Amino acid sequence: MTPFDQKTAPHDERLIKKLSEIALTIRRNSLIMTTKAASGHPGGSLSCADILAAIYFHQLRYDPENPNWGGRDRFILSKGHAAPAFYAALAIAGFFPTEELWKLRKLGSMLQGHPDMRKTPGVDASTGTLGQGLSIGVGMALAFRLDGKDNRVYVLLGDGELDEGQVWEAAMSAAHYKIDNLTAIVDYNRQQLSGCTEKIMNLEPIVDKWKAFGWHVIQIDGHDMKQILDALDEAEKIKGKPTVILAYTIKGKGVPMLEKLFLAGDCKYHGTPLTETELARALEELYG
Amino acid sequence: MAEKLALMRDAYGETLVELGRRNNNIVVLDADLSPSTKTSLFAKEFPERFFDVGVAEANMISIAAGLASVGKIAFASTFAVFGVEKGLNQFKQSVAYPNLNVKLVTTHGGISVGEDGSSHFCIEDLAVMRSLPNVTVIVPADAVETRVATRAIAEHFGPVFMRLSRPKTPLVYDDGYRFMGKELKFEIGKSITLREGRDVTILATGLMVAESLLAVQELAKEGIDAGVINFHTIKPIDREAILRAATSTGALVTAEEHNVIGGLGGAVAEVLVEENPVPMVRVGIQDTYAESGPWRELFAKYGLTSSDIVKAVKKVLKRRGR
Ligand SMILES: Cc1ncc(C[n+]2csc(CCOP(=O)(O)OP(=O)(O)O)c2C)c(N)n1
Image (cartoon, rainbow over all chains, first blue to last red; front, top):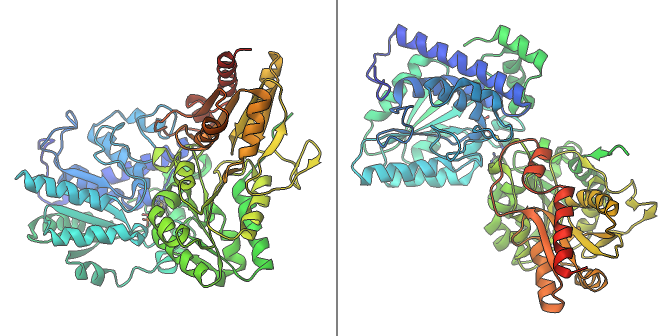
């Protein structure tokens, strides 16, 4: 297995076990980072940990020794507030030492509150204002096609983020340009900042919406590693139109206390880190 | 003297509730940030007059325009960076141009947002909003001023942009809008002279008003007598106050948590250059993107503390010759 291309590995028990362990580390470090920073977004970091593990340790082509390698695929964290999970994945991938994680959000740190492509090796798009990642991804995908290159683009969006009109402008344009070298993934945890999406701004019927916009839609359990891997492969095989993976997830996944609060519609831990005491307990109970 | 701290956001949310009780025509909108902007307080008491449109700022502003065009007084809130930048054309086209009664009140202005970093900072809001015809631009200095300002903009007919801050910030005023025992009156477009000075005048807005008052004390130790004027209104700018200060001290320093381009410094310079070009120096962010960090540390690194104002005063006095 070269660091440049890992995705030929079969989706077997061994791979799934490895990726699940990585996801657990991403979760653990996201929690520790945000508590140490005394700010940041735990809930939406935990819900996308499995997706990030699958992308960074199986699907994506990159070289941590050479972050600007031209042959790399691109990943865009459009829901930029999940930066802790993203940084945790980049550290495991070897883009920078793990110690950097503990400087998250501190003055002078390479790890900004939201992804910054000029400060952090491995980050290819600056995000934080929701709604822009898919458009940036469409631009990258068009450029690769113009250059006859086979690089792929992956964009991870939040479900609350889909409220932004620009997401649908991007969706329409991706289908219009018949972009098939881009995969969008929606972390459908059914919560946003101030409550559940159903209550704040209902997205359903979401499958019909993406289909009507000309996309191939795959629905999966976003915490089932096999389903994530299979969906990422299926997306690559679809030609002539873009693919979106609707990943049904749980906000706060892996920490029973957080899962319970979010499911009850209490979004306090969307943008509030755990206290030291809460963290100690969460790390003991952490799973998934 | 221990600093007293308070949240402008609390003052805003509580005043909205007070206004809502008095006037059925007040409606409030938010874009999935009501727990932060504190419009949640209004939402709780008047759920039928509160609209959370989700993460959709552009939509929010044009919906506010529609509500206003049918006679509502529409307050729309989110963070400054999203309200100003994601809804700018909507604010111009659907609100400012037709001169509708929409109040865009954004929290998390400037860089005192802190740890979230540059994606969430807004150091261009005053420049941008100030350049839109019909728009009134307000920046309260603390929680007390936020209360009176919120009432005043509800009374005022027309588009208003008001910038509030994220953190708990030092109180400049005592309850009831008093300063040094004196009760004040908040009038849109009329600055507040907090202190007369013989040698130099500091014209400040927002969180920099408290910093300016600290600078006055530091300057006094060196025998420099500095005055401070709080420009809670950036537009219409109080020309008379600027010209009075120019005549009386002949040297001005502006202080704002904003890019040095186009905000309070820009507004003051425009007046001076046409009427009485005395030396002035601008304290503000030097046309750069800041970074994540605790806000006090950011103020130190990006030149927004009382000692930066002191330095600016010395520089302007040297230019004037004293
Ligand atoms: C344009 C914009 N508006 C508002 C915000 C503030 N904000 C940060 S996260 C968030 C909610 C996002 O919900 P979702 O996309 O579902 O993310 P998740 O639940 O996965 O964390 C909001 C409103 C933002 N970052 N960008």
